[in-house]
Length: 418
Image 1: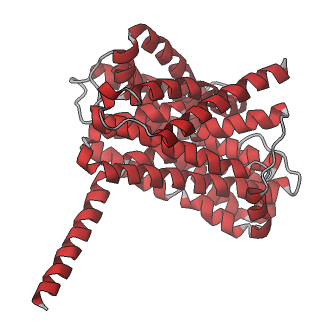
Image 2 (image 1 turned 180 degrees about the horizontal axis):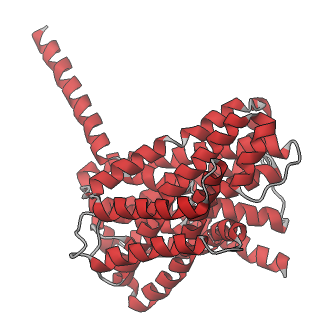
Image 3 (image 1 turned 30 degrees about the horizontal axis):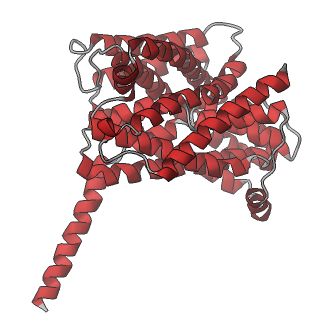
């Protein structure tokens, strides 16, 4: 009996040690995936629900599978090599290719950064706060948190922000959808090759598997210092984050499909979606939707410039890391500051076409994604680099199919439009 008690006691200690280790190592996967639901993402999901109803909701399943595979590849490369994605691309393919990649992703990410400060402005206006107050204050807040904080502090703040995405799930329950109809849309997928529908599908992929995510995830895995023997926890973190982001995306599309689409209400922004909910589902839905938009925008306004900064500084061989002091990594913090205040400053300009910026930045994400994926596939299948941790046939198939489908959709859309 005493041996049994010892075994039970040992098993409990082992369980708690495993749970404790997971909570210590969790963060990069959950944070990176949830930032996908930024202002541009929420706008894209809202438009998908308001314009197409539940017609494209089936696409969340294959997109989620692709996201899990791609994020796992990045995390694995970070753990095995101890280097960021930009570092590896520069070392493997040379500075010239890395430079062109950096220029393309900087321009794409700048559009994403603008969309997030636009989200802060739009969300806070619903609560009666003028953008000339909300945008400068939010810019200073996200700048101060990253520049003055440590990696551990910043990560905890980001994890807390992830919790507030539950506001969209609550909104989805409040609107009382027809769950039978929802299930039918998943089991009987529909799609046409109309330009508007193809553009939306590319946008859904681009906002959910954005190119910048891969650079941020791998850099944060490296900065966290996760070892190969701890990798199973990081992998679970990635999978959990990928599932969470799709649950939130599902409820945003669902809310807009069950209210706006059914009543023929057209929208152009996530703010319009929030305001339009009031007469259809009650003012609490409006406030919950708006709160989620502000939270997501602030969250992403911190991460997106940070991911771009990792990308640029790694590619140029500069010092990177939130744990470093300003004097130790002046280029890293200087570039981050530039993106924050440039993004916020541009949003304050009058008559700026925010909606095209927010939506088409996500479509461009989807068009750029295959190029980043091809670099990743060449790197992760390099046996000299990854040793015994290269891709298996299933992961290679999913990643290559994702790349080919996105290239084909982009080319087909261009042909249809011209």
